[in-house]
Amino acid sequence: MARLRAAACALVAALVAILILPVAVWAEPAARIPRIGILAERPPPDPMLAAFVEGLRDFGYIEGQNIVIERRYGQGAVDKYPALAAELIALNLDVLVVGGAVAAKSAKAASKTVPIVFTAVGDPVAAGLVASLARPDGNATGLSNIIADLSGKQLDLLKQAAPRAQRVAVLHNPLNSEPALRATREAAVALRLELRLYEVRQAGDLEHAFSAAASQRSDAILALSDPVIGNALPQLARLAIANRLPAIYSRGEFAQEGGLLAYGPDFSVNYRRAAAYVHKILRGAKPAELPVEQPTKFELVINMKTARRIGLAISQSLVQRADRVIE
Image (cartoon, rainbow, N blue to C red; front, side, top):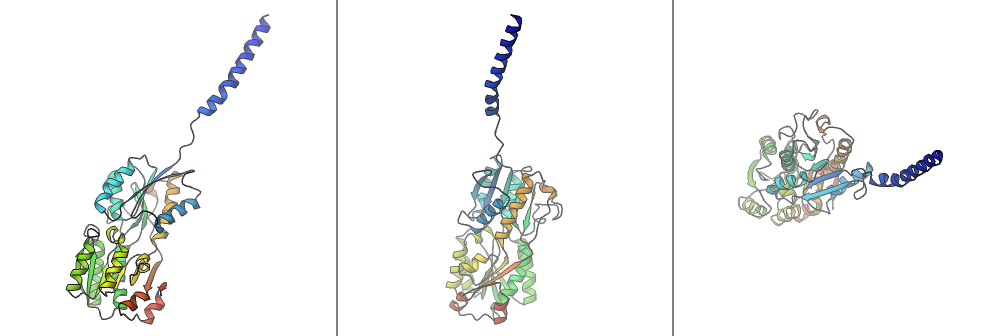
């Protein structure tokens, strides 16, 4: 009888274990899906955002399946960046991806611990984002577009496209332009050009800047890279054509929108490369140990259709140097 009773107890215990086991398995928490924040300049369709998502796919991350992407858009309103960055940081992010210096500084002010990957900062060291390019020593790293150093080259290209130009109107946002302005002034001395500065703090300032530039008989336009101006490229191109002024900006999209010249790095490549930083951080790398990358290729785009519309004859030598020519 004792043996029978023991056997019955063992059977009951086995049945209980069988019944409980699935519950324990079902109760096991699922693996946490990484949450990525991105503070972008513009909403879709945006080739840079698309490049970032494609870059994530290269590493096996598919939105909605094994990664979550939280998006916010500045749309040229740089005064809103601090609030947008703080809003994203509050979402318990694993990594926050941002664009230029204004967005990166806003993110850095919002958190000293959440990893930040910037995609297009002209001089990350001067901006106070990293200690050095080789060893960032903080919670931010990413890609520089060295755009401040390129403004002098842009001025030179503008002079080559319009050799008779003597007075160049420089459109800039004082919140984001000081390093580029220094390089522009140095180049202007070497090229014997007179600079006239016009502030563009919001998109509505473009009309006034062009009106002032035209009334003061400016011969050409150099628009320095900035979220406000970058969010208004169609308007910038339209105003330049309407005033028959040759103009240059850093992104190839400007020429595609009707601007005369564009010279700078391919920003889509930077955003795609940012996905590699995100992948490394999700696998345990620290931003402080990931060196800042710099672009190695710069693209010159010339819109010949616009040249004809404003009555400008571009030299064949400059056309032959272009990476892309829009006819």
